[in-house]
Length: 584
Ligand code: URP
Ligand code: ZN
Ligand code: ZN
Image 1 (cartoon, rainbow, N blue to C red):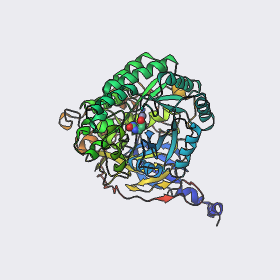
Image 2: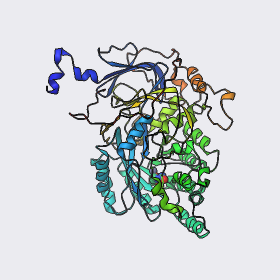
Image 3: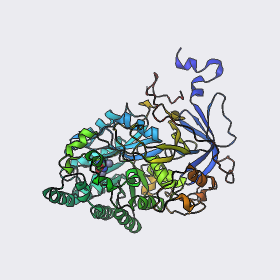
Image 4: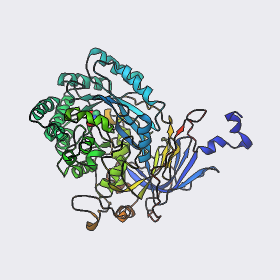
């Protein structure tokens, strides 16, 4: 029977009833406020948010009592199927986005990185080819400007006007590979500003690294510890400052990727206070979830698995300082920089740390690690969590409010987050392609129970049911109102109000989160349902017109934690008839 005939049996829209979902009794969290509300989804779009909604019969209902309903995570920084340093990353667009969804991320932004001399459009087309039929969630693309010529400028124009790209990454490191000199960087940033696109930089001084490396190798330091020694905090902070100065000179908004140190945050804070157009800073799950002491591990496999650039810092205060910077809006986003390599590839650098392919895991555990280290410790509240892990990326890359917000009209990319769910991170249970996890053994409290991707339940009470090819390529338009003006300001001024500090016995003095599940739930129980309960107030109401004011209702987590089968996964290819967002 043709599909349209089936849809009209007895006047009931059968296909559509499979496309309906109601999430009841949860607490909806956006970056500017929370409310107790139900969320009704139809055909991949959020149709209503409120209470006492009138819902068609036959709609599947998820009871979110005691849970948080948040926008799906947006990871602004991944590297799937990337060839670099003589190796190829282990996670392709299927495995990578499957792992993303398992952890609650429903949009990724990957990097097209052309070889020196390669056409940017050709590289972009290659990436689309690698990704389009494999992605389990929506994705967008940044493009690297890894060399400079007038043809590169032309292709940047084309990428913006015809191909849905609004951000370009320039490298101040990787000398003799992707690095631009300051003149080229300046012209590339100028071009970004002309195109009303966003310039991104990898901020490390590539010349200093090159010289330090020569000296380290000459002195016999060839192991992974040499990686960190060749590029200390100052090398990162100097480049952050220089990138900000160059951007300011050409009046270009700037986004600094993977900020890894206290010194770099300090340089960024100074620049942010003095300059307009804006500068944004991204940090990584790796930075808040682990540290640079691992480079000294006697096991090469272990130490090399932590090698990324800029490196993890040995200063034990770094993770907490970075979390605080995220909470205080000195940093605006957290990504993963997910870039995994198999052991055999890391071994390319067995006798020379400069040959260890750079990259770590993070796409799957980014949200859980941030929740554990940031929310369970009381450093940030759930609204700020949503901001740095989802909404800020949507705003900056011009996907907001379609993405990064739970509101009528937005894409139904949602999490039902259980603040009581406990698990121990391990390569034995993760979905990423490599048998190593930099967060191995860490106990986390809080995780996704349901993950909804374009209206489809892809993590269903812990069971992973991703659909290969379900995701779409998201065009990111230029002239983003949050960056170039004309739109609402992103929440910037943090206010610590009405959010209970964790009690002393529950918080270890160095900020280490407790494993006591009651801490997280106690904190949530104590929160009032007002926008002032969030650290990023904007004065905007998140309530939609016609919805009840539930600001005085209480939120209590009473349900027992439910066991999640973290390993179960169902791989489904696109159903016949295309990318329906039906709820199977
Ligand atoms: O070490 C890293 N970060 N690898 C990925 C490439 C990059 O610089 O982002
Ligand atoms: Zn980089
Ligand atoms: Zn990266």
